[in-house]
View (cartoon, rainbow, N blue to C red):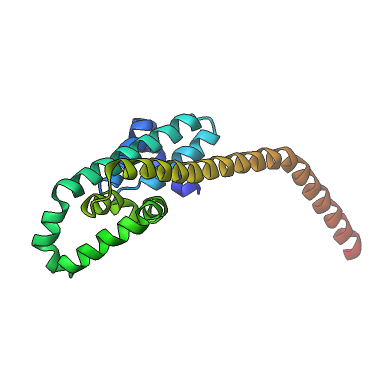
Length: 199
């Protein structure tokens, strides 16, 4: 965890909440960005007092909802045309596109929520929903709900973990003096015993 924080802390120190927002926004547009990773790192730092947890959660949620919505608009406005024109390069044809549309009509709400928790699916969620023709208001609602569940899960889990690590560190610092003293006493007793045994 320390290596993880050392790697990301400079970005969070320099750009703060904007780093969390930008990464999650671009991830929602389908780009391979470390949105989830920055959310976890920022929440962990919030447990140390370097950031505010509610601000981290709201920033990540707003960014992921906005990114997913823009991705939806891209899919809705141009996704079908692109798939029909270039889809054969990735084995997607008219019949498979119609299957995706039917699947989204039946299970789109669950897909939008669950996809949030998986890499690749999280990035393509909005684009696929838009291409499949999922109604805008329905996507927006479940995108916001899925974003809230995903942000809350990783953000609060990381924040709680960070607090536990800090508490363990404080407790260890309090008892390490006693442990060190016990070790010194044990070493002195051992040396005295060995000297007497040698004589």
